[in-house]
Image 1 (cartoon, rainbow, N blue to C red):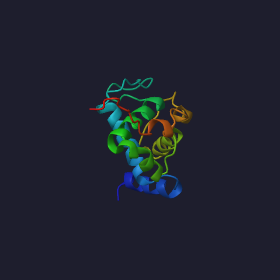
Image 2: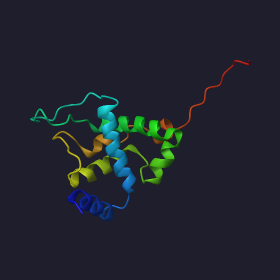
Image 3: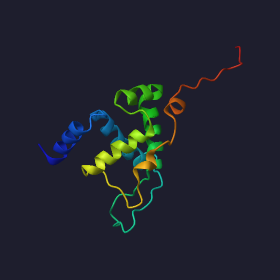
Length: 136
C-alpha cells in the first residue's frame, strides 16, 4: 500500500467523525473551485510560480456549496449529513485533517476558523419553490 492510502486509513481510524466520502468530496470541491468555477485565488506568500493557487477557507466553503448542489441537488444536505458534515466548520476540520497527513496545504495566513459559519446548511440546501400565477 502506498503512503497516501496509509495516511488516509490512519486518519479515518484516528478521527471517526467523517466518512471517507467526505474527504474525497472536499478534495473534489477544491478541484471544482479551481477548474470549473475558476475562482480567484490568493497566492501563498513566497510561493513558487509553479505552485497551485491557494483558495481561502471562505472561498472553498462557497465552492463546495455549489459543487454539492450540482452533484446532489436538494439532497445535498442529506448526503453531507450522512458523511458526518453538518456545517461549514466540518469542512475546516476535514481540510485540516488532510493538511495534517500532507494531502492538502495551507498558507501562513490560513486558520481553521476561516471555515466557521460561512452559511447555514438549512438555508442554502433548502428547496426553493416558485409559485406561478399563470393559469394556463
